[in-house]
Amino acid sequence: MNLLVTGAAGFIGSHFVLRHIKNHPEDTIVVLDKLTYAADKSLLDPIAEQITFVEGDIADQDLMTKLVEDHSIDTIINFAAESHVDNSISDATPFLHTNVIGTQAIIEVVKAHPDVRLLHVSTDEVYGDVGDDDPSCKVTDTLRPSSPYSASKAAAEMLVLAAIRTFAIQAVITRCTNNYGPHQADEKFIPTVIRNALADNPIPIFGTGKNKRDWIYVGDHCDAIETLLTVDWKSDQRTIFNIGIDREFENIEVAKMILTLLGKSHDLISFVEDRKGHDWRYAVDSSETRTLGWAPKMDFEEGLKETIDWYKSKYA
Ligand SMILES: NC(=O)c1ccc[n+]([C@@H]2O[C@H](COP(=O)([O-])OP(=O)(O)OC[C@H]3O[C@@H](n4cnc5c(N)ncnc54)[C@H](O)[C@@H]3O)[C@@H](O)[C@H]2O)c1
Image (tube, rainbow, N blue to C red):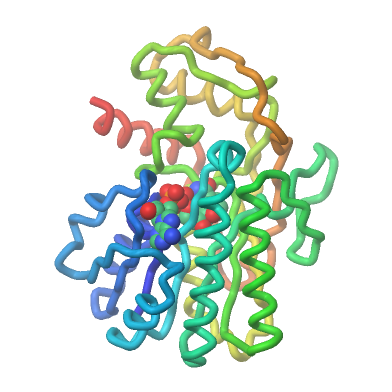
């Protein structure tokens, strides 16, 4: 395959290309990343000689077109996004630019190159939250995004779905639950807990800490994407795939697990004012994705240990 991977200097995209090039050294990988505050280009240093890295914006349609044509790209994987909910509450503008306008620019490129497939990485946050006794969300459920971030991701999905219907572009959408693992930006929940715990600083926990998330190890998410790349999208009519592990933890439980693994006191936990519009619980039904032969492999406690070790060396 000749892949154009956007946003691969970020958390999930960097894992994806590092793993993909290891397993498929014969493939071409072009990375396009704007190098925002969330990016760390050095994550790609181990494979710098094996990929083409381009600094740029997915909303730059001319640049995207040139990359697709110059490198005979057959598949675009769109990880690029503004991804932090709290930032979207402060200022939604960059979210609209990248997540909505940027996605439409990619769609325009795919429309003009009908042989090029688009795997658009979305999020389970487009469903909004679910109650404790509600069933897991199915891909046919109504979208009820709560934050400007999730609203911008839902808008991007609508544009992709419209282009599938109107222009018959080849595209699939993934809705994954919260990822954890090495490489995640410092602002996110698990790195925040680890960083503060290592420094013996108070660990901020929104509200009651009882909000539930279904944490997936980033490598398992990447495996699901690899699985989708093997599917013949022309014969398989499904377009939206949920990805999750069906094991939920309250935020407070995760914080306590990390503190225990680090040998730190649970007294470091400090409750702070709840996030505005904070989603209570996410839960997705990923049975459709499992029919493709994918299943998550990483045990949560093992994955947390690996994650903690990585941040220990980062913050040392
Ligand atoms: N992290 C999660 O828990 C999670 C869960 C489900 C889905 N997702 C989705 O997965 C994707 C990747 O998330 P992540 O956590 O790796 O995000 P991230 O914030 O760590 O990385 C995003 C990357 O995109 C780049 N970028 C931002 N704007 C760009 C633009 N206009 N053009 C080119 N590059 C740009 C950034 O520089 C960064 O390298 C996002 O689409 C996100 O919505 C994330």
